[in-house]
Length: 85
Image (tube, rainbow, N blue to C red; front, side):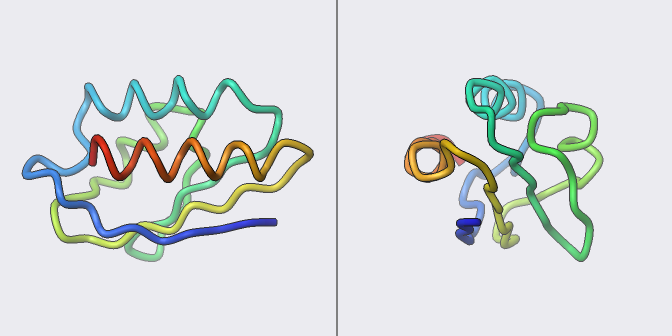
């Protein structure tokens, strides 16, 4: 398992458009990808679960990736967070 944390810098937090894009990135991988924020955890491949976290600007999220392609998934997800959130 690999994990990383990230503080959301986007003014609107994780709103609909980046959430949809993030889910699409996660769905490319076989690994199980979970995101945690404010003591809640959601499957990053499910947009409604992600949106239910209600992540806002300056909140920290932790992304955990478990599976055969976890190293590649973590690399792309980190890049997505840095460029979009």
